[in-house]
Length: 337
Image 1: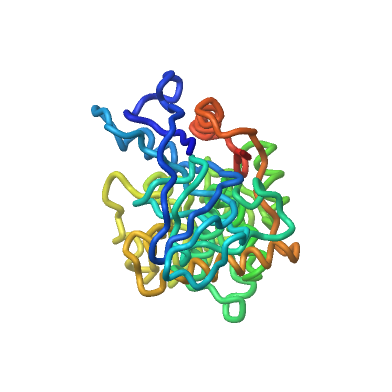
Image 2 (image 1 turned 90 degrees about the vertical axis):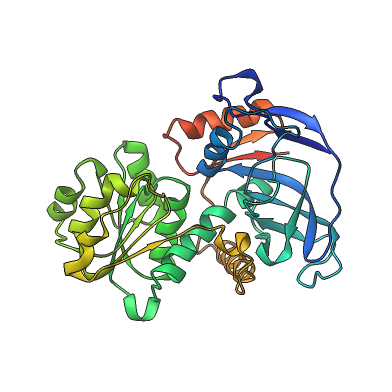
């Protein structure tokens, strides 16, 4: 099969930052599905791994990355019970395994969902990683409930990015929250409003912007940009007994003591936790993806795809990564095969 990968971590402008190569098509065992991939999407995790996974070394075999895809089940392992050959699926995969920047991929059935029927392959491929991340951060980590939390306020830091775009939709359409999103450019402000944000504020002076809009505190905050850069603002704006959650990691320790007097909570969200640790509830990602597919088919949610490239090639992956690394991407970039 054809695949695109890298043998050493290089700047995306370098000729060998991605290389196309041929490798053996794998065979599924156990709970694995062999997927014939129709489309993929790119995420910030992709370029972070490309930049760091093979620093100052040259790998014997190129590393295949990529964690968003849609395709067709071509073969199944002996323990598979959730899917049949020929099923159309979408998924984000497992960061500890080979990624989707290839013609075929092995994926555990418990982290795969039925592809939304009404979406193109590329529009479907744009959704799994961000939808799982947004769903888990809102409903598994913060444990927001539409019944008890209806009308409460959520601040989304990084509203126009891939995760922010679907988090706004889920918070508004499913949880019935009052959603404040951050954005600073006319295009990103408009995009957040399209996704359903009730209010868009400039992240450059966050506390003043939120207070000026009439909110002394907010019930919940999700950070999709940079935990430490916004920590003081988040600590100031979170309501007493509120909840902050982040996906962005932190190079230096976070000053959790700033939440003490408010008895506020903080959670990390890492979408690959369930697959990496083979948790007991790993199949929950299968169920989440199916719920999201139904919501997309019903029109309650919309795909966040904004740009599509054609063809699995080193050149297209370079272009997609370069765009992502610019930090100006709105929504999601997909590549259809």
